[in-house]
Length: 243
Image (cartoon, rainbow, N blue to C red):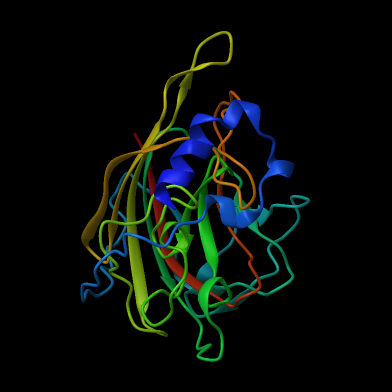
């Protein structure tokens, strides 16, 4: 399946998204080994922009669909997806960043795979680091927690048990395009999941769609997006540093 995926990327210019079923860009091997780790709760440094802090203040966020107020559920310092309310995005836009995110999967033992605690962290609104309950449920490995969605699985599976908090520390380097809109340097990402290195300066081939192949349309700065995938996944302590 990995060979098939590679061939699909190689022949991408000859294919359209409509030619491919979702399964064409999914693979199940190798399976990243599991390691036990706990969320790393790191307070924002003095030069960080606090995106989600005390009392789950959403002043830095708007609805992705229309720019209106965030309709997710707030409880203490925690902001939880309200299924059906839609994704949210930052008011500000960014290029290269260091991002800290803490997330918690809901208690959904009756669900499996992509239906279990699904959300995502998107850079520029188009490059996704997957959020999923992957400790006690299997799915395609390039779609499990901390994967670069539909591209690269993590080196190891460091997901906490269902209902426990997880942390992502992400260094994201934006792609660079020339005047003709061609990629001259791809995006790269380094990710620590619960303090464990799971992507080490990993290249992002392009957008991370559910159906179809990565695309590389030229763009400038973009927002951070948190996805509503129909699961009440929770977030807290989100901060960002521009690099």
